Image 1 (spheres, rainbow, N blue to C red):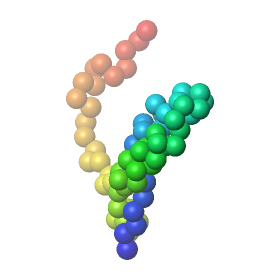
Image 2: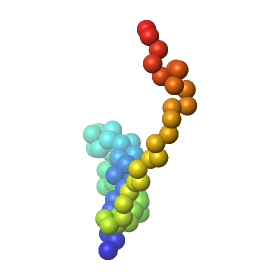
Image 3: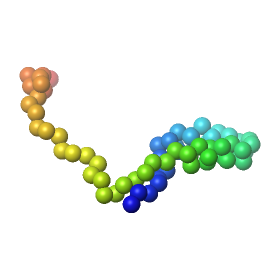
Image 4: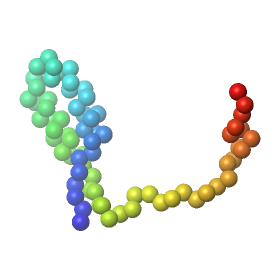
Length: 71
């Protein structure tokens, strides 16, 4: 079962420029409506049964001599 979730990173970047206008009280209704419509359009489908990441394959360090240098 998939559910739609709000992309919180996009919501933050949409709402952040509105903060000065909200604090000053300038034309809040139309700006907030436009921002909420943008946020509603930026959703993603969440599938809880899908494994997000696979473990990485162990590899040797490419530059082992540079990994531990004395100060």
